Each structure stands twice: as structure tokens, then as C-alpha cells.
Length: 413
Image (tube, rainbow, N blue to C red; front, side, top):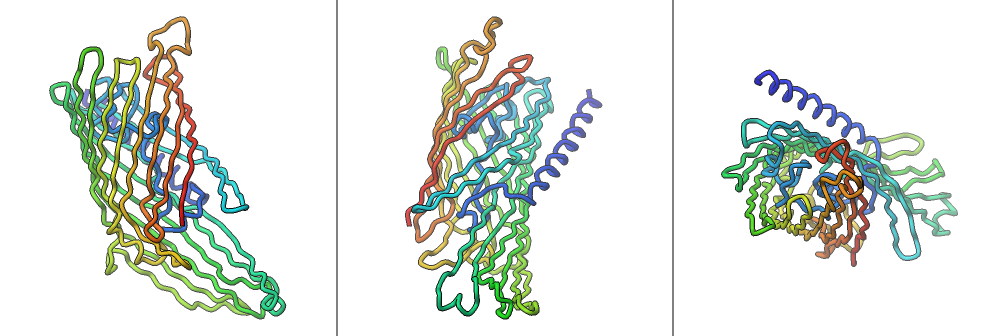
């Protein structure tokens, strides 16, 4: 028994390292695409896997022995006590950007998560995994068409681009008491690289010097997440409640700030490396509290509503080069973000031996959330709906999940 446990742990470590390598390999390409990725650490990924994401992103209160729940470390004990579980998710995104009469589009494909889970002793279990935490990806250009200027300098182009991601590597453990109350704790390691480049003036006439600036941002930090869940049978249904708390995290690393003048010759105007740990304004990732309530009837149906509130007001991003970008007519600040989600799952007959589609799990959800930053005190709103199905493979505990999300980001200046 001990040898089997050791083998499982070693295999877990190997698989997690392989997942980390796969995630880091994506740094060379856009893992997200939005003009808002210019600010801070970019867009925050919705945490969770295909199971929770297809229900609007809920999962704080969910306990399901067929799936790994990444949103609450207390949920790791909802499992067959003898089984070894794994989850691997990919996502593909299509984004359409509109401003006035201008429209652009972008398509992305990336890793969502790699997670494994295994029992420890009786009512306790662990999980190890990796998933993206934030993404930066943007590129835009602007041509200056003032006749008085281009008659002397020829074409003038202004370009900005950025790419990179931060990741979340985590180890979680949980235990269940009296078959009702579950507690869990999760250790988290954040790490990643973000590159931002700006070419505010590029001249085709080489007798004029062009200006190039860039930021190379390397981030790393640690934090912890705590969770609890409780289930209470009420007649033919079961009521479940859950709560999580993620501590704020001090982020270390460095920012390399470079300025180059390019013309007939290349001159270095600025080369400075700022260590974030020694900054007068420390960089912090926000803390988060979440609560959820769920109602289920065996393996027939499940409904859940979640609410989360995260505090980024003291992130320090508005004072750190590369994370705060000055603009005409607006002020960038970090603030409190919140999200409200609801989801529903229905399985017609989990044990049907005649009709395969009646054993499928059908899911739908809705969500509303606000970004962790604001322009002139106004936050970005995100609204959307999700749809998904899970088709069992061989037996109910194995399956392929397919999901879709339709959403819209709105911002008023």
C-alpha cells in the first residue's frame, strides 16, 4: 500500500512538471488578446476547469465525485476513496473587438489546466495542478497623417505590442469530518513573464531617429487559499454551502525598463532594472473571498449560485513602470472586483443502458463580473452565458466535456 502511494505521488510530480513545461511554452504566443491587456498584469483568467466553467463558473459549494473541483480545496475529498483522478482542459477563444466603425478579430488556442488528484488516508485527499492566472496579449498601430510632418519625415508609425502570462501552480489537501463538513487548504505559487513594447515614433526616413521602449516583467510570489463545505440532506434533496478565502500575495521579481533611440546609430537612452521586492510601493495580488450555495438531487440535477469579492486596491500597480501606462484623459487604478455566477446541471438518467445520450450531463450558466482595474474610477463589466455537455467514456466517472461561452465586455469612458 505504501509503495502504491509513493508511486502515485511520484507520478503526480512528473505530470505536474510536464504541465508546467507545456504552459511555459505558450509564453512565446498570445494567450489572450484585448486592448485592456495593456494595463496591469492583463486579463485575469476565470479559475476552474471545463466542469465548472460550463456552469457559469460556479463551484465553491459543489461536491461531485465524478469531477475534480478546482475552485474550493475542500472539494478534493468528494471522490471515490480508491480512485486516482486527472483533469486536462484546453480552450479556444474567438474575440471580436469593436470601437465606433472599426472592427477587428482574433482567434486563440491555449492550455486551461492540468490537474491530478489522489486519496491520502480514509477521508482525506490531495490535488496538484497548474493553470493560467492572467494573460497579456495586444498589438495595435497608428499612422500619423499630418501633411506638415510627413512632407519632411515621410511615413510616421506608432505601434504597441505585448504578450506573456502568469501562472498558478498549486498543491491542495482536504479532509472530511462526519461525512458532512469538509475543510481544505491550498498552497499557491505564482510565476510568469510579461513583455510590453512601445514604438511611439518610427520613421521611414532614416535621417530621423525613432524611439523604442520596452518592459520585461518577471513575477513570482506565494499565497494560500482556505476552503470549507458543508452538506445537509433535506428530504429528497441535499443543500450545500461553501466558502473560500485567498490571502493577498506580495509579488517579487523585477522590471527591466529599456529606452533606445534608433536612426543612423542606436543609442541606449535608458536601461534600468527595478527589483520589485525593494520597491517603495510593493506589488501585491489581491485577496479574495467567495461564498456559494447549491442544491442537488442525487445524480439527477444540481443548481448553484456563487459570489466572489476580491480587493486589489493596494496592488501598487499604478506606481510600477510597465504595469501602469499613462494615457491622455484617463487615470488607471486598481480597485475591488466582484462576480456573481449561477449554473445548472441535469442528467436525464445516469444509469440508462439503452440510450447513451440520456447519460450525458447537460449544463448551462450565466455570469456577471467586474474587472480589477478602473479608468477614471469606472470599471469594465463582463456578462455572458455558458453551455456545455459531458459525454461518459466507458463509465460515468470518465468523460469528455465540451463547452461554449458567449460574453461581452463593456466599458464606458
